[in-house]
Length: 387
Image (cartoon, rainbow, N blue to C red; front, side, top):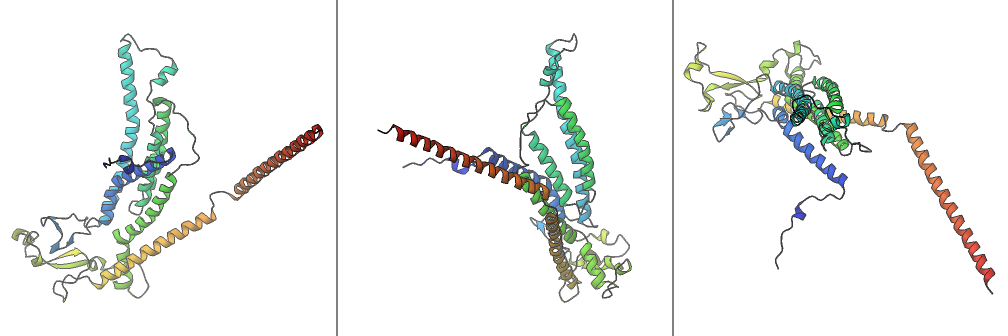
């Protein structure tokens, strides 16, 4: 027997239209989220962390060395990336949202003038002028939701690296409200109204972004920034170690402690400096410094991780765990103290439900009484007619 392959078993077939909309929304959000946030996640957690060390760099095809962060740290690169996204991208989006219908309507009016001649502007009734405006996209509301959700993600996920993100988002939303009002009144046809009991799957997406933002900010503070290494140095290796003090005096020597020593002679052939570079300051350079916690080249285990590295790593992991549990505990406490429905509204809903049940019970009881009375009358009539 020959069996023809069926494509139906490999395609998604939702049962209802709402299920299809939820599936489409989730897929489009995931696509846009990965597309727009991949660069920020790369800068925050991967840039400069897989390059190896001097003398043992990891290279692509044994030729190209991987990209590294700025000497000041990856947090500066992440801050610049977030600033570009929150300022330039939002400005471009607003320009396109307003510019596209303006250009389309101008082109429509131009074609109408050509059709009616150049004797003057054609006079149309108001309803025909409105009809010549741009129709609202069938997914216009979806696009607005998607834009707001993506903005919420940019604002919350890396807010520790760019604290101005909420302020820029607020300013953008104030401007966009006026732009949307102008578009609805002058550039678009009146959209058809539709009823919805809630925001649908967007609520679950917002919950997921909130959880992801807590985890991401914990990793940004612990891994990307120098907050934890500075604390470890101040309380363990600095001049105030063991004294329980904190301040600028306790951070003396931190930069020197955060740099490791490397012997220039141990460079790979691709990385060895030329003779002119090594003697440009008047004497040959034998040692250089780099950001890491490794042993000296003449120690028993050259370039092995020092004890300070493991202390910093343990402190980072502990901070992530404590930070996440603390934030989630506060979130659950606030959610418990401030319920979604006020107590008086919940009581009124319960009373309304109780009254509806009472009315249904009374109606059913009345129907049963009527049926019983009808059966009695029918039974009595049939008894009288019996010979």
